[in-house]
Amino acid sequence: MIVEALHRNNDQVVQEITKMVSEFRRIAVLWEDLWTDKIAHLQPELARRAQQLKIEFDKIDQNMVYSLAEKDKAKSDSYTAIFQTVITTLEKLCDMTINCTPCTPREEWFIEKFKAPIEDAITNLRTPKPLKKIKECWEAFKKIETKLSKEFMGGKTLSLAEVSPYLAEMKDSIIHIPGLSSSDEEITIHSIKEEILVIPTKTKPKKLVFVGSDGKSYGYLFKGLEDLHLDERMMQILRITNRLLKRDPESNRRSLRARNYGVIPLGNHSGMIQWVDNTSTLFTLYRKWQYREAASNILMQPQDQVDNKAPPAHPSKPNDMFYEKVAAALKEAGVSTSIPRKNWPMEVLRKVYSDLVSETPSTLLEKELWASCSTSSVWYRKSKSFVRSLAVMSVIGYIIGLGDRHLDNILIDFVQGEIIHIDYNICFEKGKRLRIPETVPFRLTQNFQAALGMSGVDGYFKQASCHSLRVLRENKKSLLTLLDAFVYDPLLDWSQDSKIKKDEPPLEVSVNLGLLASRMAKFKEELETHRQKLDQSLALIEITADDITSAVENFHIPSA
Image (cartoon, rainbow, N blue to C red):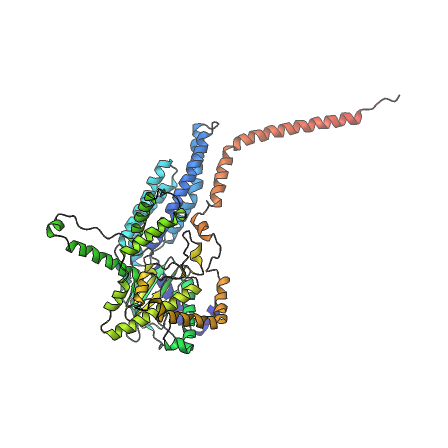
């Protein structure tokens, strides 16, 4: 009804928006993204099914009744039943991609380069084979995944005309720039810049730049294979919180606010996020320090030693450093590294944490803020802005149970000096239900504390935190009304074991039914023989019963 009314009132706008959203989805999730994601997700599933197949093969081999031909037939049926779901999933993806008529030059390129290898790999997987050959069969898919990953390795730029000719030719659209505040003038999309930047992360998001009718550029990050509805809802909470803080005299005087940005879902599996300029993730700062340290160590060595050494390797990743130290600490404590992480001794984890803290400078963020300032007054303004934004987001994060605050999910704006949080998928204490529970209320590690200044947590940080918490408490009815929607919202999974259930899914019912059918087929002939014998026996019993009944009826006892 709503769409019909919109069509009647302004059909041109609806058609243009519909076409534009369709093209945005195409850019957010390219065919290579779909195949890379699907192959990666099917890898552990294939291992589980191979294990299930091994169990079935062992049962068949132990059966002394079957002949060799019957065993081969039973193994073939079991293979088909167990792997049919995987094959069907891949075939459906083929129907969505390589079996479709290409609409863009990029899709034509994908079909030309990958259609034949994909079809050969699926055909090979469909043919029943011994256990040893299954791994070799899946290697073909892994080679395809490797080739696709290399396409975007180290970041890459795509041509808009190659990915979406419609958007490349679009000029003077009547569609407004999305994500701008209502106070801004009505700015429409004049055009979209030709270059698409692919960010080299797991989901390969793409950055597009819109040119507005005001002549300015507006960047957006298009993310695929993710649902951004929850992030959009969280941005609404931050905007309402900012209004409450602005209405309060004490908070308004201190310019307390939570930085937010536009999030526009394009469906259940894609969306666009407003690009925040002049920002950097905290992990980027840490990584730059690692490279500076590595270069400094080389420069401090004598020249003859440097010439005789191989080129230095890249600095270790934080995860690798952590597990290396944990392995050494567990070995020293006489604990096996194979035990689950939740059973690692607390004193070992505490020692590893202390060692890593001592090896990392606590003034990285403080020095970066200082280096971004031209005068002492600018530094003072940015420092206050940083402390207050950190306090506001710490309080809000504590209230909404925000987790997953690793260094890639926290940005800092070096122009304003403000902290910006991204990725709100782990919220409402969901972090406490992860395999490795997150128990801290918010992130306030040594680099944050050092950047708070001489007064530490007892200065501007404490004042801003108290005022933020007071304002939220005074307006708790409004906030609770807004948060009540999450209780009934399908965006959130409140079950305690949802993560475990997702990580360890059982084999599909169809697989078990297929195995049952194949096992029943083995006994079909034998069951049919027994059924015929039973029918014959029942017929004889029926005749005998009739004879007995007739004899009893005709039997007369002579009178005395």
